Length: 189
Image (cartoon, rainbow, N blue to C red; front, side, top):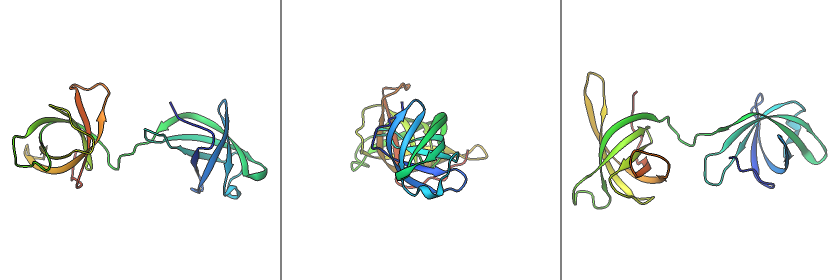
């Protein structure tokens, strides 16, 4: 569910001109939004725009709309069109996988056994994994795993990472986390 509230700051982008302005939400009524539009000179009635709607605990949503007109004081109405699109926060595309991995909590690196994990998806900047035991958000890990290469070869790599999210949805194991790598990985599908 999209969180929209009076006074909320939204970004509006003109779909053809690419102009981006910040607006304040004044009101809502059945598929129409009333906004205070700064820089309204560049917008005209029936212009198609996109609204970026930030969320408190989630990635922003993108809404498509048509401008109903701009009135005195740069007050305008927008008619929403279509369904909202959930925007992706990630910098790189995720690749579904099933890679066995080992991890070690830092700074204890080298002082004990590695624990087992399974990487369920991976990108050049992070991974989604399940672990044997619980981890805390912001924990630092050394994660090692093998990446497949061409010619039926695997390449073993290790990288430092930080737990950025504890997943509470349905997963094969109880402990599931999003981790962000300390460095970008070169991945090929």
